[in-house]
Length: 112
Length: 117
Image 1 (cartoon, chains in turn yellow, green):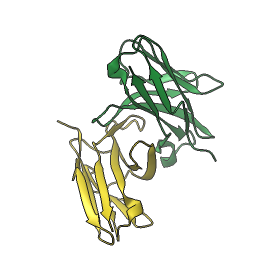
Image 2 (cartoon, rainbow over the protein chains, first blue to last red):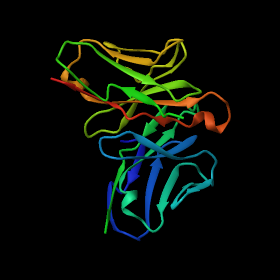
Image 3 (cartoon, rainbow over the protein chains, first blue to last red):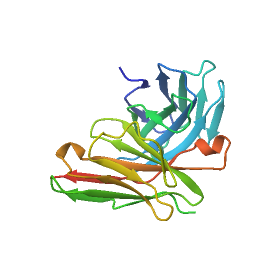
């Protein structure tokens, strides 16, 4: 089984709606990273969380790491077509801060 | 400040040839990571390097693959005698060495898409 599970695998929302993507680990998360990838392109760094309970926001995207440090959620408020893409969570599961394990991604489509 | 640069963006090789993928980290970054994204699979860590040193190569296949990050110039991921199963997107990431939380932030390049025919 995957060490890092993302849900849902895919999501279609109407423009203006809110949405949440989850990332659950079978191990302690020493660092949790959220990236966005457009098909066929590189990864865009969104946020990194390290402390239990930590929450960060960038524009309309908010990410939180739960207190037990085994789950993170990414929340988008008032979605726009520019939010469409594949969202990937990556995790430091060893504490070394260098080797990231990635989930399989959540594909987001935003309909007008 | 330019981002992580990778070249070539697309590379086609016949079975048995060698593939060389280059990565120039962001300015001020001295840590480089290589990841591979196989079709329909997630990103997998391959190797972590600092200047002139391989720190962690636990994700590298035992044969045909090698990586270096010389004192001068880009990091190179080299695949010898490529096979069809090597077809994938290869991403390079870099992080700063300033210490603190920011030193763990990995910024990715656009990737090199290798196709083996």
